[in-house]
Length: 69
Image (tube, rainbow, N blue to C red; front, side):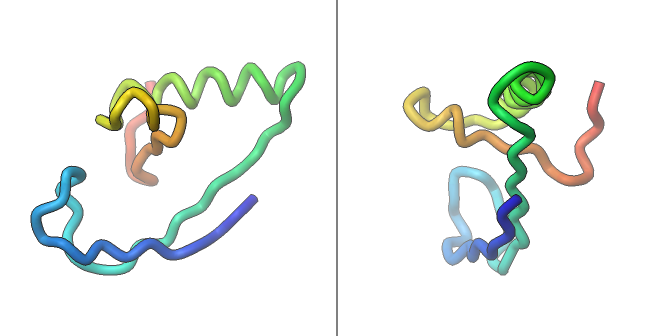
């Protein structure tokens, strides 16, 4: 798990973030078996809701308050 800060500096950004600092949490649930299945599932959900260029789609994220179906 990695934790870090991201700062949005530009009012007109492509993600419609308000200017400010954000806490970012990344987790790794494994690369084989059930961990890989969990990653595949949630990465697919994140990519569906996060509008990134195709070459960066694997960096997609979900809001901590996102409703997961």
